Structures are given as C-alpha cells and as structure tokens.
Image (cartoon, rainbow, N blue to C red; front, top):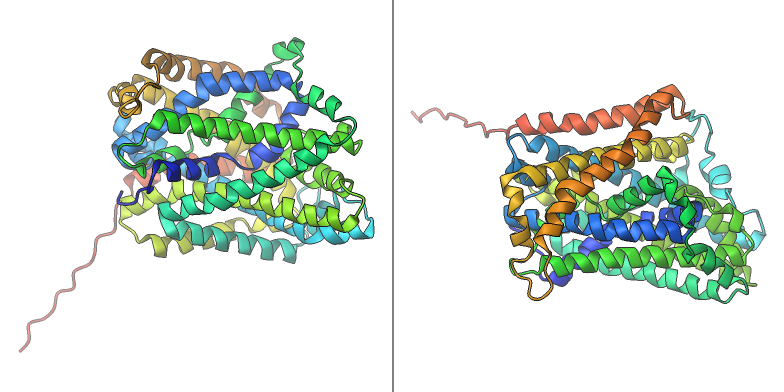
Length: 494
C-alpha cells in the first residue's frame, strides 16, 4: 500500500475515531445500568487488559508487516486465509450501512429537538412515533423524507472522507473525536450539579459482586471490548498497513484502548448523572437505540429551565453523536475498500463514490417504518454473532501459524522500556481469548435455535441472509480475478 499516516499521532487519532463511537456513548452506559454498574466495569476493564489490548496489538503489527488489509493479512497466516479476511471486510461494510442509518436518525432527531423542547411535547419516543412512524411488526408502510435526506447527507460526508484516504481519516478524527467528547464533558458537568449526583455515581461505580455468576454479564462485557475496539473486522489491519515504519505499536495501542475506555466511562457519567437528576433513573436501557431516542431526549429537555437552551444543547449533542457514527462508518468502509483497491488495482477516487452510492441504496430500509426492527436484528447478527465467530477464528489463526509466532517481535520492534511480554501475549491470543469466547458464546448461540422472538421473515432477511452474504464473500472474493484489459488488434494500414 502506498498510503501512510504522516505520524504516530495520525494513526492514534484515526484508530481512536474508529474505536470511539455509538457503542461508547449509548450502549456502554446502558449495559452498566443493566449489569450492576461497577460489576460490569470491573469485568470490562479486566477483559480490555487481558484480551483486547493483545489482539489490538496483533492486528496492527500484522497490518504493518504485511502492508495490506485483512484478506492479505489472514492469507499470510495460513493457506486459504483470504476466506477469513474477506468476511471481516464484508462484516465491516454491513456495519457501516447500519451506522450510516443511525447517523441519519440522529441528524433527524437534532432537527426536531428544539421545537419539541419549545412546545413542551413529550420528547420520549417522539422520533419513532412522529418522524419515523415505526411499526412494531416490521411492515413497510411508508418512508420518512427527513430521514432519507439526512442519510443521504451522511453518505456524502462519508464519501468525502473515504476519497481522501489515510490523511482524511486522521484529519476527520480531530473533529469527530474531540467535539463529541467536549459535549459529553459538558453534560457530565451539568449532571454533577444535581443534588442526587452522588447516588448516580454510586450506581455507576459501586460493584455488586453477587452478579459475577451471571453468564449474560460476562458475554456482554467481553463483547463490548471486541466491538468497541473494532477487533476482528478488518479495521486495525488496514490502519496498521498505513503505519509509519518506526512507530511504537505497543504504546500507540495502549493509548487507543485507554482512550476508548475513558470515553465510555465519561459517557456513562453523563448519562447516569443527567438521568438521575431528571428523575428518570428507571428508564435507562441496555439498548443504545432506546437510550438515544427515548431516554436522552427526556433528560435533555429537563437539563435547564430555558426550553431554548435545552433544545440547543440537544442539537449539539445529537450532531456530535452523528459525527461519531460517521467516523466509525468511514473506518469500516475503509476496511472494506482498501483490500478491494489493492486486489483489483482500482482508483480510490472513483471507487469510493460507487461504494457509497451502493451503501446508501442498501440502507434505504433504515428510512422506512421497518427500520427499528431491521436495525435490531441486523445489529444482533452482524455485530454480535459474526464478530464472535470471526474473533475466535482470527485468534486461532494467529496462535497456531508460523507467521503469527513472530508478531510479538514486530510489536516490540521499536519499543523501548515499555514492551509487550511475549508469554502474556501468547497466553492471551492463543488460549485465553478463544477459550473464553467459545465458553461464554455457547448459551447465546443456543438461543438461535430456541427462537429470538422476531418475525420469521424479518429474522431471515435481516439476520440469516446478511450473515450468509458476509461469509460467502470469502470464497467469492478469493477466486475473483482482476479483469484483464482487452487488446484490440488493429488492421495494418494499406
């Protein structure tokens, strides 16, 4: 790959932008509320240190050594490894479509939050009832023009970032990371002024160790680590391929992981203190969608005495969330696009618009009345079941391949005093990570056969069909060949 980040800081900014997203701002606080606050935090931090950071280092180091995306990296580990790399890219592509749809929702909410606050209307669920007109059974009976237009704006922004390559990724992250963090800090400061902020912080940070016997707690904490750090979905190998040669991978990975965790905790403080201060503590949900469009609007409407000030705060907040979603979506598109460009020798500036227009067309469902059901099912299959399968497969490939055995040396090649212990790395990637994931995932996968409670047609189309497309991309792309230019034979002149 010819492209590179200009510096270690550019890599860190782009990687933090990929890691810090809606999962940090919306899903993480809800999971803390459901699974005992400090108990969830304790398991999450342990999983981050023992499992997440070693695998993050492995992906970045492999990307820099191979100088290619996930298919090329996985192909360097074992024969037929491309069949694992391409599904990682396809999974990122599907996730980018979901994130673009959610970003469209967030911009639509930003357009309505001021009039809702000024009119005194019920802000909770206003978006679903009055903008999206969502149906519970997933029947498509209409489309929201506002959401459609907002989603088109999102895809246009993503296309601009994608066309710019590595430089645009790091430059965009300066805005899509710092501005949302500043807004979360503002909400946290306001929340801490409430009289019951101490109760909110106790609910967030004090652990209840009696919950440690709850298997669902463990699988959600572990899943949050892998999902939040964008592991096993092709992003970090692609970013690693853009790394400058003498970059200290281990220190950069520590900064990325700690920044990701810090934003998650900051978002939790903002949500807990704001919600408790407004008397809505019983409404916190592990669903990021419910938190974003049902809980936060009600909390924002009660932040200040001035409805206009509440509305302006809401606009800034939802625009910042949309920025997070756009940055994460661009990172996922980059993971899918860069290997295709390399394999077929395509032009980035021409290929990026084609990919984004295709993604926009595929995501039209998220502007319809069936959007909520589609997002819920697709997110469960794409970002939970698929990520676990891909992560286990990647860890086994890294742990038992000849190329993978030399990765600790690659990680520490330009490190000084702070280095990754090789023994710890191998125990984590080769044994602990796949074993823990398999052990905890079995009960969750068994629910597939017991039934998830969705309409059969919706689960097939948004779940099983999407998964099949992801994993079939492996053999399809592996055997696809670059089209040969046709040579036109010219007749000799008379």
